[in-house]
Length: 285
Image (tube, rainbow, N blue to C red):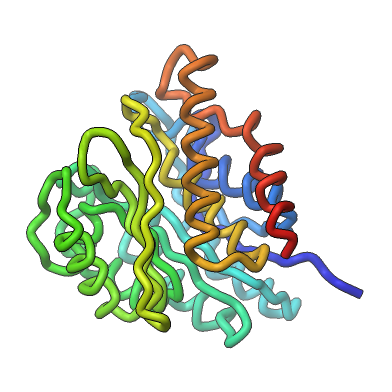
């Protein structure tokens, strides 16, 4: 009997504002993947543009949850980590990866900690070094340009980029240890935006670019990484999965432009889930 794939998503959860677990759980589930969750914190809203939000740290619950799952002999086909709020949480995730990583599953790390040339609030440059250690354990990493530069010790350069710089940064990221890299926020001009993929095993570099949709939309990184994880668990190759994730994220942004009055609320991904499922069915894997 064929059993469903199972992913473990390690993220914070915001009661309002679509990001982290509130997008990872439905998107990966829509890909036909059973999704277990480990909340790292609970917030009333996400922190992008909102003030006065509540925050409850769940660091002390993470390791006991993992120990209980281990006692149940649970297996995961993918481990997917996103925003981690402290050095301690990074260390805990490293221990969880050691406990549940096998030759037959993958660890996807989104080193969500910086953007637009700056670390997120409360993070120091040393945090990037610690995150690089976690990325060294990953099979697949999904950084943006700021995160990539900070983890590799390169100078951050704002876009548009040259292909030489993009591929130089991909190679520097590969030196950290992951087998596959998806670098987001790639654009060579003001017309197209997307990602670049490097498979270190094949040595192949691929680009997936789509017409730029103007504006800043909270949660798009989590939306992209979640769709990428779900597509990979459906048996797609990296470049195929990145293409589906890019098109899905663009569709979510277009829908958001049509129906959402406040971009702080997050991207309107719900109406795009049927399209994501249809795209995966075309590959039939």
